[in-house]
Length: 89
Image 1: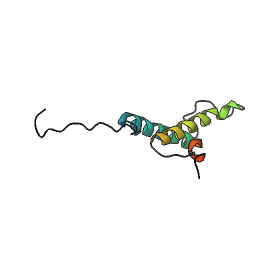
Image 2: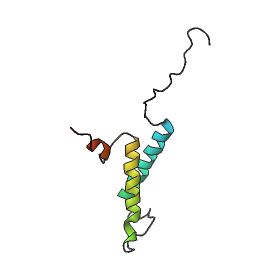
Image 3: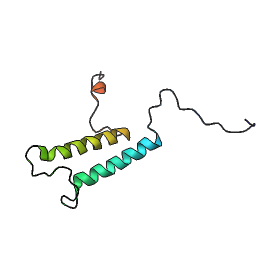
Image 4: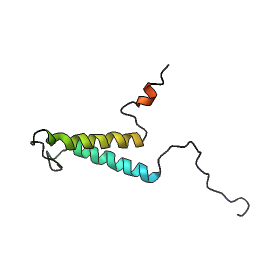
């Protein structure tokens, strides 16, 4: 390599930041989840019809899980981790 050239700096061993692709997917997941849960068209996106007993709201449960996971990937902990709660002193 020529003098004065720049080299990419390797990530630290403990660096847990998600890649740009993972962050982009998480942002897309958050947007989809919010659009699905807010549902401005009153049911224009519906995986399982809500009028079915018991199973009608399972799609909202799954989408809420997707939202929580995507927010966690982006660094926003909506539900505190059980591992951290046990380490309180």
